[in-house]
Image (cartoon, rainbow, N blue to C red):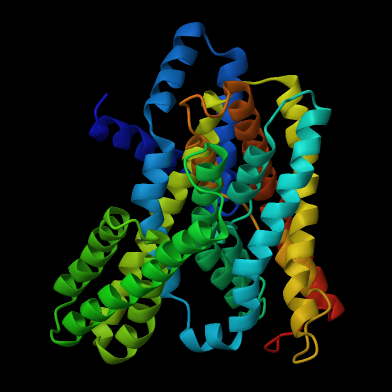
Amino acid sequence: MNILDTAAVLLTLTAVFGYINHRLFKLPTSIGILLIGLVLSILLLLFGGNAMKESADEFVTRIDFNETVMNVMLSFLLFAGALHVNLGDLRDQKWVVAILASAGLLVSTSLVGVVSYFVFSWAGLDVPFLWCFVFGALISPTDPVAVLGILKKVGAPKSLETKITGESLFNDGVGVVVYLVLVGLAAGQAEASVISVGKLFLVEVGGGIFLGGVIGYVAYWMLKTIDNYQVEILITLALVTGGYQLAASWHLSGPLAMVVAGLMIGNHGRLMAMSDTTRDHLDLFWELVDEILNALLFLLIGLEIFVLTWSGQAFSAGLVLIVVVLASRIIAVSLPVVVLKRARTFSPGIIRILTWGGLRGGISVALALALPKDGSLDMESRQAILMATYLVVIFSIAVQGLTLKPLISRLLAQGNLDLKNK
């Protein structure tokens, strides 16, 4: 099956599941598609004939989820997300976002890493200590895909949208760098010195941000010198595809480059380099790209159940780690409140919303599937981490995603979530 056949099957399934969800279940599109795909996959595994199960397993196994998400979808999703973030709103929330995306992510990584080591041991799984920290790194980045639509529908404060979006955009980039550092250390491929790790962070993170600014400015200048929305949309496509590949070839953070470039085009570019016609077409185009790719991504997550090796030990550990990840998230999101509460006020319900709204998504699954198979990590440990990741992500999207709306509505009704900028 070639790439066109695979794309045809995935797009057809996404369209059909999206239609079924819209007619019958009325769930948020991405969540509905994921749950339908997951339920049908489980039914196929339990009751499908051998030939049907083998065909489905072969199809899903052939899809390189990590390559598809990290090197294809992620660049478009991050750029599209950053494109609609108001830089003024982000500036107002800069310290909250910065602490969540840096210190908060490191705290979550460390807590999950330490506790997961004991959880895996309790379940009878001998997962090495450093690889538990790798699990902490891959499960800590949050994904705003399913959350933002819910926030807008219930009339949540704009500042809350900015906090969640800003954190997820930046902690995706930082989280991938932390993951790469820890995988290198765990696999014995990198030095464990502070200098070497600091140098890698400086090059990856700093270089990615700098590259994003440079290519964003070049694209901004090109947009400013013409008025043709077809060509201008092509310029933004070239910015995303070419810029991300350039970052990868120079070993810089592609995700952070896309976030910075998206912020520049979405703010300075939108205000000073686009006509009203271009602005309308560009917004519609990238919103459509965002919706289609998110739907495909959530379908893939639902289908990835076929690549799991099921075991009672790994399943038990995964269930416990759902609670561990949530507890670590509470501690991580409490950081900015504790640090900044003397300088500003926060709504009483902000910690609950940031905790419950910190969904895990495709990046976590992609990073788990990218764990090495070269012998540096034994297969039992690899499958245990993959199972735990999958269970946390499914719980996060299905349970947290579907119960976030009533939680926000209740907090708004109780006056525990102000509509002011907090």
